[in-house]
Image (cartoon, rainbow, N blue to C red; front, side, top):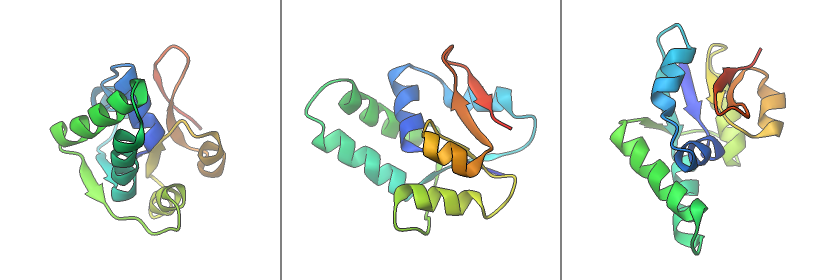
Length: 125
């Protein structure tokens, strides 16, 4: 099973200093592989460069550092947009789960890992 990390999830975790690797381990009771689409990495790099200053610039840089530090596997996806690529990757195996805060993606996928108002990770459905 792959656990696929989305841009907004990574930025939120970086801003709020959440150790998503440990939190996901606590949440899931089975073996999984954390993966990040190369398109998400590109989004983070663009945010880091184009954002003038502030929390998003810092968070995108920290998110990139954490991906490298945690040795998260980079994967290629097929799709015209980042979200389409993530959705296609998640549908390759019914056990795959996406970590996202994107409402539209949550409705399309149904089963996702999100962060509630108490900053706790939750598995939907």
